[in-house]
Image 1 (cartoon, rainbow, N blue to C red):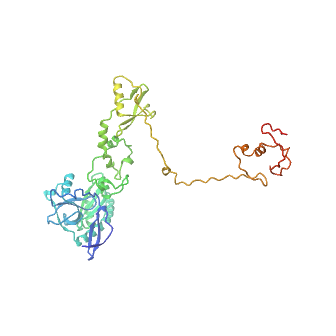
Image 2 (cartoon, one colour):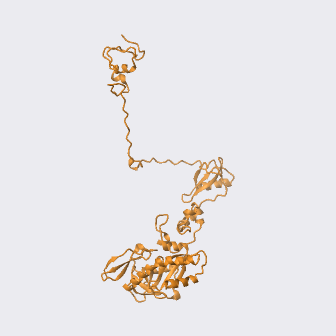
Length: 434
C-alpha cells in the first residue's frame, strides 16, 4: 500500500495519520513522538529463542505484552488490534524477539492467570478511523473531568485520560496525596461520557513521565524517555556527592528529588570509603587545621586554620592526611600540612593569539588628533624635535628666549621670524656675544 499523505505525528501515541491512494485512513509509526523509546541493539543478531510474544505500546508510557496467536508477520512499528477487556484496542509493536524476554525479566511482568492477551490482526482502515475518533475525545474529556472533580470537592488531580480504540472504555490517571473515595465520581463520569470508567492512581514521577518535558540539563525528561522503574531518592545522595542542599536545585518538575541524583551515587559512595575520616582537627606546629571541603574524585581535602571561617586554606592529598593522622595518634606534631617534600606546581605559560581574544570583535576607538591653535596671525605650527640643537642651532637659540624689551631689528609684528643680523645669545648665561 502506498501512503501518499500524512498529518503531523500525534505526540504520545508515536504515530501519524493519513490517507492512502484509495482515500482510506491509514497510520504509520513515528519514532520521535513516543515516550520510553527503546534502541533495538540486538536487531542485527538472529533470535536465539524464537517467540510469539510481542511488546505493544499505547499512549505515553503504557505498554503490555501480547501473544501472536494467528502467526502474523509482524515487525517493529506495525499497528495492530489487540485484545482488551472489554472490546479491543489498537497499539504499535515496540519489541520483538529476544528483547521481549529481557524486558519481561527486567520489569518482572507476569501474565494474568498465566495467559497472555492476544493480537487479533493488523489494524484495518475501520480500526484506525475509530482510533482517531477516540483520540480526539481525550482532551475535552480530561478538562471536563477536572471540573467535575473540583465541583465535588475531591482532593485529586486528573493528569491524563486515555480512550480505548473502540471507545467503550477510558482510563483516568490521577494523583492524590491520600485515599480518595471516587465511587460517586465514577457514576457521574459514566452518565456524562457514556463509557466504562477505570480510575488509575499514579505518583508524581509517573505523571511527569506521561506528560513529558525538558529538564534543567536541556534534554528530555529521563522518566519520559527511558526510565521505566523509579528508585527511592533521598537527600543523603546529595550529601555524599557534596551537592548544595537547595530544594529548588535538587527538585525536578515533579516536585520530587531528581532521579539523576542516583546515577553517580555508587561511584561517590565507593570513593568515600577509601577517604580518611576525621573526628578532630589536624595538629601541626603552625596550629590546628579543620576540614572544610573534600574532593572525593580528586582525592584531595581542604583545611582551614579557623573553625569559624575559611582562612589560610590548604589543600593536600588523602595520603598526606593519613600520614598526619598517624603522627598525631603517636603524640607528634608535623611541621606543616604540606610537608618538606612539597614542591609547588609550576604553571605552564599559556599562549594566546588574537583569535582567542574576547574583544577581537569590538570596534577600535579612533583617537582624535589635537590641533595646535595659532598664537597669532600668520603663525604656523612646526614639529619640534627632541633635540633642537642637533638640527638647527639658530632655532634652538630663538626658542631659548629673547628679552621682550630688546627685540632685534627686522622682527615682524606678531611673529618670531628674525633677519640674519640679530644678536647671538648664549643658552647658559643669556649674555650677548660679540
